[in-house]
Image (tube, rainbow, N blue to C red; front, side):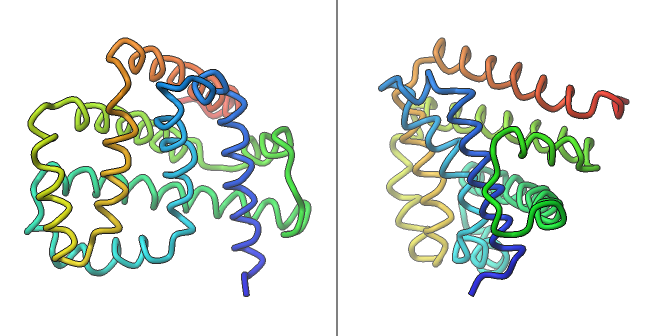
Length: 210
């Protein structure tokens, strides 16, 4: 049975994804970018509720990561860092949600914005956005370095042997989601995400600028 915090945190994830679908609707509608934005805005944000993924990240991966190729290890570690900070920030908002509305409340995007503005983590939010943007760039580089087309299958085999395939699968999904996207289209997408998300963050914490 879910605790109130788990219920509230699931609602925070849901409404954030709703906001992303609203902000970046054009990219969700376009055939060549749909898989990419679904990966970045739906799949990655769903990782914090994936208990098996988190268990492997916290236990098995630490004991076998030295056996994994450097690039694969780096991508997994970036996702782990992003997931850890995402979960921490979402838990903070979930507690605010419980205090204000109760764990069962279904948030509107505007109500989510109110909670976001009331949180006290501007520096963590900035670090989180930096990680999000860096993660997008790293997946583009992964997908468009020609040699990686030849190492994905061996990497899949190795991670299955080591018992960490669910972690690698997340990297693999990102690879294939970004692969069809041209450099120009990807750059315009990241530019728009960067602009809109920094505006969203900075306007929420206008009095906390450093």
